[in-house]
Length: 132
Image 1 (cartoon, rainbow, N blue to C red):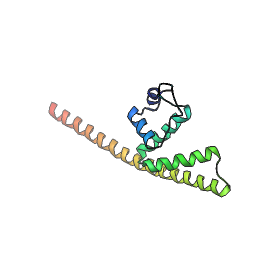
Image 2 (cartoon, helix red, strand yellow; image 1 turned 135 degrees about the vertical axis):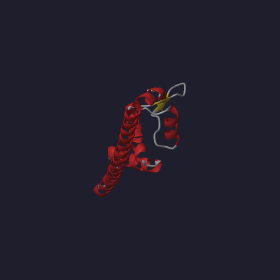
Image 3 (tube, helix red, strand yellow; image 1 turned 180 degrees about the horizontal axis):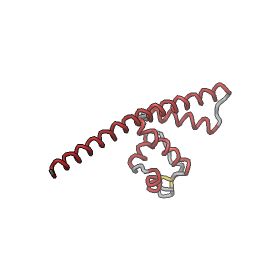
Image 4 (spheres, helix red, strand yellow; image 1 turned 30 degrees about the vertical axis):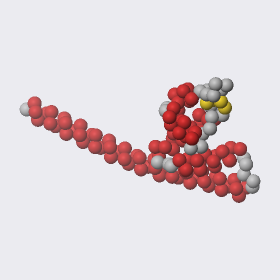
């Protein structure tokens, strides 16, 4: 699929996808005869991983590290059980960091919802007082 379809499926801008290509996070699987980037389903899934990591505050280097570890696990290039376990540990560290960020975001969301509710209450009180 071409970059426009990938952008629509991933909800990423063309510019963002190109940026991720420039930084080495994702590479189009092929080019058309006209030079257009062509992506596979695996490329889309890779972009989805990146898209999910971004709001959790992961850096491009961290994204690259996780993608490298999962690529190695997927291709089973670990030379022995110890290397395989080390790759799994890297992924577990990202899982833990993601869970910690999600917990922080839940607290922030709860506070934001409390604030919005307080504003709504205030506006209703003022509207009631104005009618009296």
